[in-house]
Image 1 (cartoon, rainbow, N blue to C red):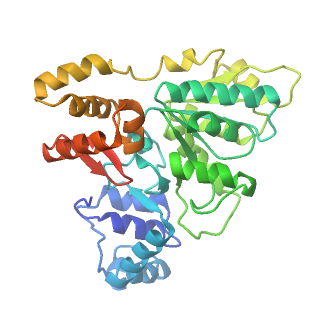
Image 2 (cartoon, one colour; image 1 turned 90 degrees about the vertical axis):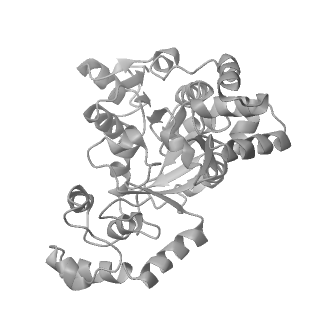
Length: 366
């Protein structure tokens, strides 16, 4: 989707041009109708708009038809999708934060981006207690239909992803590296499972060189995608506490799973409790109460079937999609329909203009 004054490919090109940061892009985006930046603009035009010479030359080359086609092909070869400010799929919660990234690079099911979400993060050097709680709580959140967001790090993050991965809500891994780079390397198998069943996300353009600052900045995305943040074991100075700080700035609730006062792995979270900036979490129910109420699918199905004139299989699928967008695998698991009946129902609903197939093979209501 393009908007007046900007195309989505312009956003991607700006985001990938060295020397142009999100604040500059945000300024152009805000004034895009009066000061459009569009494909085909020359270096002189860009310099006249206030862009430094080096950045203007690089962006002008990227905005040529050849430059844009080459960029599209690079992403397609790597199996990487993009979601930009110009796209309706851009996550609503993330869009509202200060410093929302203009572009997200994705591998997997982008339908998870707008699903109710809970962040579960913590230390890499987790105890057996911490790993167990992270897995169990993440599983409960995902069972309730919430996507579990974390950072693919060792320890608590990994257990949170594993707990949510095969449940209804799924999981989103926000990477501090470009989305095609597996880090840490020992999480290769988990990375691949998330690519197949969940969603991998990064704001770093593919091929970007690593620098340590990429990891702290990604934490604002973890909290920004989520309704709340759950901290399971966080020592002083840990990345999980950075995520908590970003969540507080974004007016998201922060929950702390209590641990022993004698444990260095618990002390950072306990300090947040002492300061009054976080709440104690002793049961998943404390978080589940924050999730949007899910409709009674069986009663909704009958009501839809009557009002919309749908067959029972169509009504079953439509009722599920009213709850949230889903892939065909998720629909098959939730509806109980055979794959043939499911395909037939989806095709009929598309013909009747009730549902649409979105990028990432995700079905949603129109």
